[in-house]
Image 1 (cartoon, rainbow, N blue to C red):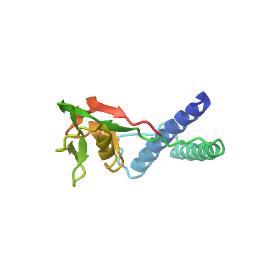
Image 2 (cartoon, one colour; image 1 turned 90 degrees about the vertical axis):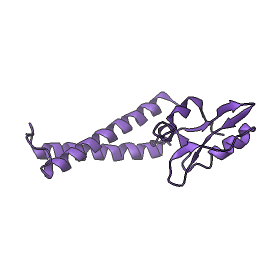
Image 3 (spheres, rainbow, N blue to C red; image 1 turned 135 degrees about the vertical axis):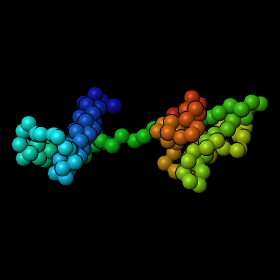
Image 4 (cartoon, helix red, strand yellow; image 1 turned 60 degrees about the horizontal axis):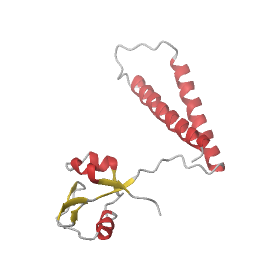
Length: 147
């Protein structure tokens, strides 16, 4: 990716995060959920800053469309290939309640295992794996390359 595109994506994501934080603060302040806090500037100034930042976000989004830059970072998808001996592998599956667990099936074919991984809704992402009860399986994760 060209450097200017990555800078634009980074700028967009940082600005979006800051907007969200100001929005949360303004809402909490209006609902008096920030006791013992006194603004050092007028509330209207902070609101104006928020609106200016939101406007700039819209400008960046419009510019990105013209320049064909995808501002939304796609989460990387992984396959998990856990060696269990004799050339067999196990992988993770998603149970009915949405939790990841170790599959009962042992695969001799990595191609079939990878196909099985593709059935997990949304794919196996780093966040999904690391926040699961089988987080230890992350050590066997390999990024799926786009075709």
